[in-house]
Length: 122
Image (cartoon, rainbow, N blue to C red; front, side, top):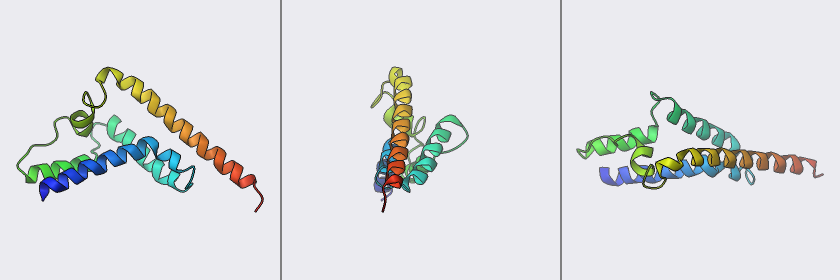
């Protein structure tokens, strides 16, 4: 059961990363999502910038790994699952810039849609 729960945590972690990266676009359809997205995006940045701030999903996966007699994820979630396997390390700066561009585009798009909807008479 612990192996299954660890796997579910990995899936939830990837889903959270997708939401952090693309969730701003959901606000184009559901405006209130932006508040949840701001929290997730800020948390995602903080976890990666502040070394002593743990990611709760990584901690949860480590918990289930420890219950199986395994060690913690070497280097954390990103190090273990993403760096070099999904994204080559030499492309990380490019990916970071693209992530910022995607975030800005999603927020500007959300703002423009909200502004245009506010101008439409009911």
